[in-house]
Image 1 (spheres, one colour):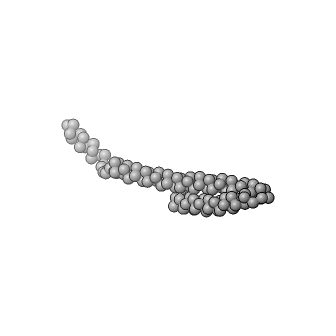
Image 2: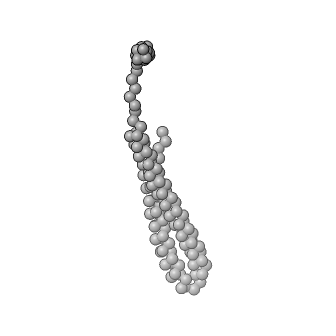
Image 3: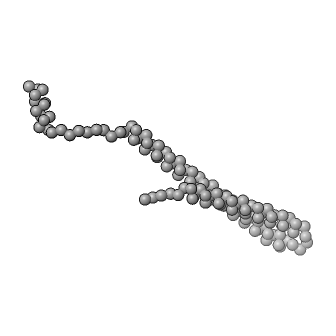
Length: 118
């Protein structure tokens, strides 16, 4: 049977959000280091390299955020869809209840019909 574990998908999204926040904190620290190093002479190449690393961290953080939001939206959308399907099934069960059927012998029905027509 096909089964989607939406809670795990949602939790993975939240985990990616936490990782994104950690990357942002690390990048903030790196920006402070870059700021201090840029005041020192002879550190231009180091500062340039650190800025490249900082830019890459920002891109990674943004990617993590996008992935996290996508996972969370997928989980929520799937849950909403399942709920709508369940509601539709409940409604259709109420509207289309099973009909009772009875069996009868055809020869009895024929006799009854002929007796009415006579």
